[in-house]
Amino acid sequence: MNRHVLSVCTSCASAHRMKQAIHRSGGERLLAQLQTIDRAAPVEGLSIEPNQCLGACDRPCAIAFNAPGKYIYLFGDLPVDDEQLASTAAEVMKFASQYHAKSDGTISYLKCPELLKKRVVAKIPPL
Image 1: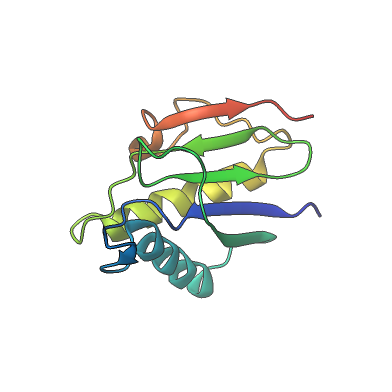
Image 2: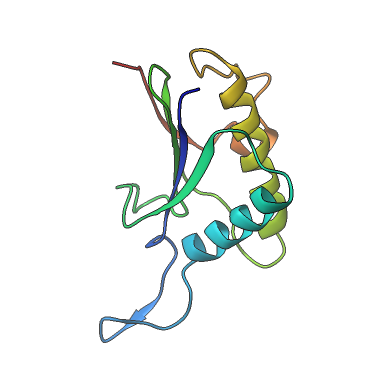
């Protein structure tokens, strides 16, 4: 079984004062919510990992999916405010299950969770 990685940018949606974080970033909050869901209902072979920066700084919060031989997906503009955090995490985990099930990782627009459909920053072909 190939290892599937969901990377969550922990710098996204952060606020700093004098180079010190004022509070947990949106990315850190999303990461924690995803890990909570994964503990309750794990996606086989999925590793949810923090990433310092995914380079989508103008589209926070950003996440990426990758696995050997599969397309890499980068998503941005994920809502992580208090009202939407749980539903965002649920939709991300739904995509994680779909991604895991596809041999090449391709998820059609029609089958992509609604929240993520217009938030694709990049879809990169496998090597």
